[in-house]
Structure formats: C-alpha cells, structure tokens
View 1 (spheres, helix red, strand yellow):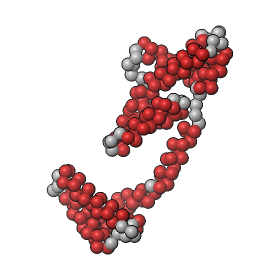
View 2 (spheres, rainbow, N blue to C red):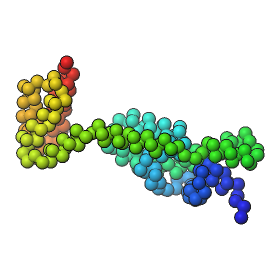
View 3 (cartoon, rainbow, N blue to C red):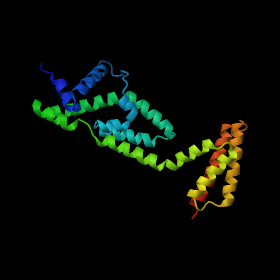
Length: 224
C-alpha cells in the first residue's frame, strides 16, 4: 500500500518508520488542539539534550541558556527543566519539523529531492547521547570526595564529631586555613547544628549564620 506523502516526509525526517508513526500520532493531536497536553518521557528525562538529539539546535541552545541563566537554585532548575521538557518537547519538535519541511518544499518541487533533504536535516545526533554521559561520569568522578564526606557524616553520632569532620575536610583542601579559624568554625558549626536540631533558631537566623560561616571559609580560601 502506497504511503501518503505526509507520512513519507515524516519517516524521512525522523529516520525510523515506527517512531515516525508515533510522532505522526502526536503531531495529529497537536494539529487538532494546539494546547494539547502531551507528555514526553524523553523530554522529561533529557530536557534540552533531547532537542539536540533530535537536531533542534536553536531550541536546544535557547533552552540551555535559559537553564543556566535562570536565577533560581540548581535543584529547582532541574525540576523545572524536567517538567517543561515533558510538556513542551512534542510541541517544539512539531514546530521544528514543520518549519524545516516548509522551507524545503518552497525551494524544491521534486518529491525525491524533498525526501532526501528532509532525511539530511532530520534524524538523530549521536553526540547528544555521549556528551551528557561523559559530563555525568566526570561530575561523579569529581564529586567522589564530597560523596565520601556525606557518607562519613552519617556515621558520626554527635554534632561535634560532624563539625570536626567538615572542618578537617576543608583544611585538607585549603592549606591557608589557619588552625585558629578552623577551631572557631568548628565551634560555631557545632552550636548551629545543636540549635537547629532543638529548633532553638529560626530559619532566617540559621541562613544568616550559614552565610557568615561560608564567608569565613571563602575568605580563608582566598589567602595565599
């Protein structure tokens, strides 16, 4: 049975017949309702990397910039990016496909030329799989000391022991950190942990105290 041109074009662009049929079903839903809520697990799990994988480079770059420039905590960025990825990537990929298809059809009348160009402009980018994996491996490798620190903290029973472990960890990586400052930091950390545990300090005061401690650490780290 001969396929309609619209499906042939989508198959050429996606590069896989079965996946093209899935995209055709998704795009048809959006055609019927531009605000259709369609969930994408690849978009949820990979975010802007999924757009790079599907060769939607411009949208991926915009998303990448938005992700890093948004002035909110990193964990909030991850959650927001995942949710937006799950909801928006079907719409973004449909828009990308229709834009590419329209531009090609304006410049070329022959069906064979159109399908060839759609195949060249579509498909997948393998590097969009490998780069995040490499980043994740490097990040985990660089995080080994901190993961080890958290594991050791869980073994300590008293707040004084936890504070001592944290300060020793900082001193090992900051030769300029004086013993006097280290002792002061250890005492303040212990008091802060105890007050927080007993709920004797408000969240606002705790945040101020933590910021002061961070300032002390950064000041010592800047010393040569």
